[in-house]
Image 1: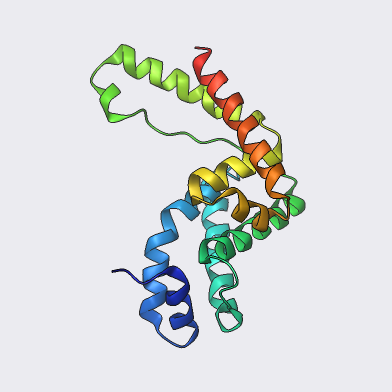
Image 2: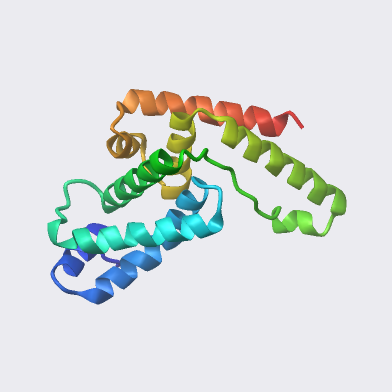
Length: 177
């Protein structure tokens, strides 16, 4: 059975570098996607991503598992992104991805998938900041509404509402094709 993230962070706090390697491996993909979808340039995302992990390393001695590790990690990421947006006054940007592999063999399906992805990306970019952030924290980080509320300093009911509105708007955008 794999050790929970909180135990790994405590072990890392106490000097077990291997515990950090495990945490990093578990969370690197979702955390990077969250950061990448929050800024326009990949190079900026990579820089912020590294800064977030540096902040985790620097905060290890103060770590106390008062919430899930992912809540703590994404609070750090959220705060770093907010600082970045304030300084740079950047708008959030959606993402580009290839269509699903099942569509790759059929050019018509591939074109449809690209169009749907484009509609989704535009709709994601057009969401109000709070809805977009709640959606990305839920989808990328797998956080619950209560955890998103803790990360963003919002009420859980407000987060649930933001998620409902975001999903409805994104679904409508994709279905409008």
